[in-house]
Length: 604
Image (cartoon, rainbow, N blue to C red; front, side, top):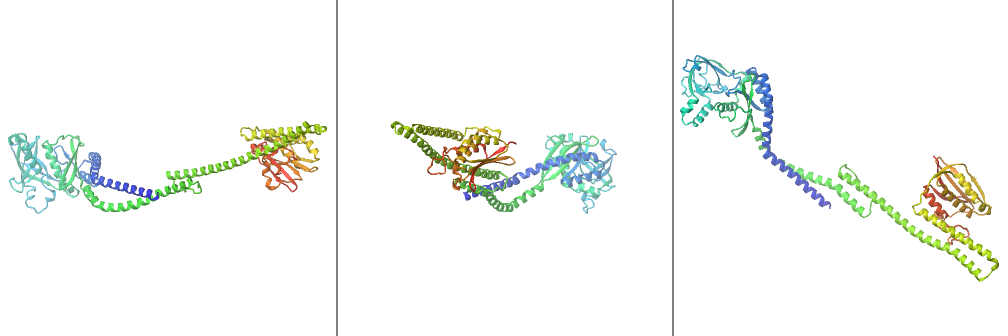
């Protein structure tokens, strides 16, 4: 059994641990990305709510907004910016140029100064570089030409450069140009397209160029973020966003096998004008982590497998050890051996089971001992019954024989002058049988278990005096000396039955005390009890018979001689009465006699 349960627990625990490991591996490899993305989206959305409030409180200048965007990236690893309803970055005064427009046929461009943000056509790193094809003409005083579309009554620049726009050094918003090629195909012919989006070509002179410095430069160095903003602007201006007024949009984007999440939240600025919070976060960390986990799991599985085997073996041994001990103890209990107890070392269910088995063992042991005692008592009772029947037969046989003999003599007319003697002998035997029957019935009543001993208060000295008066004739007949040391003591008992005990004890003393000897009756008072002692002189009881004198018909002579008189039931009746009172009693030998005693409880 030991090997069986240990092996079962070991296999079960190992299998469970390996199953949990497999589940964890599956969840991390299959669902970890989804969980990470979900949690990332949730965190960024919550951060955008906070950023919106900070934006409304701090949207004062370009430097302040640059710092706010940098703090957001450092805290949440997410790029963020703000664009207006036309898709332009807000707060771009530090990276722009002012152009004085030449006279034009278009009314909206005649004699005006235009401020053009540079992030849509050129990178901030290109300024100061040695590339002669990009920025030599972006200088104050240089002439510049611009080409674009009129969208919703506002000019949108597609290309710009030196007056010859077909030169290779021209710059362009490639997302707007690419979007135009895509949109034109949706119309039946280019004329319909240009009717909706008229083109323009204007020229002018660069009057001022602003380039960011310090912390503001970083706002324009994230080309991936700016590229997505320009793509969003193209879709927004051409109306390709399904619901541009939707409060929240989340867009999936992939670049160079790296996934990104783009968040576009429509808000209102401090002046109540519509704007968009544009945020972009990379999911590259989760891809790298997932890849590393797959490689690392080879080592994890080996180490975990070893740990699981060792832990399962130890766990199975620890769990089964108390169970095996319980099994061994219960097997001994089945063989009626209750000597071993299960040590209780835990407070869990196994500890409770061990405790209950110990209690069960103690109770079974107690009940078995009681049963054995009952069986032994039953054997003794059976022997007592046999002795009782034998004694009764003997006690009744003798008086019946005497009566039968007397009747036979009187019938034959022999010794007719002794007629009165034989009548007296028969009368004495009838009285003896009557007394024997009364004593037997009274003893049976006490032993039936149905008799209730009623208790009351009385003075024990008065009872003893009354008994002495009743037996005065017997005392005088043997010329005995009766000495009493009594004083008034009130006790709690059944007065009638205690008087019967005193009568039996004193009668027994008178019966076995030689003539002209002494009988002493004393009351020994204690704090809560009083001891009644009746001592007779001259005759001692052998020590081996002191316990037997309380048995029925026991007189101390094997021949059961009747010369001493009595029925042989007096002490047996006294024993039952005192046991029903629950008080100590007994008989002890002295140097020249025997003391019979019993105790009673004093009145409180």
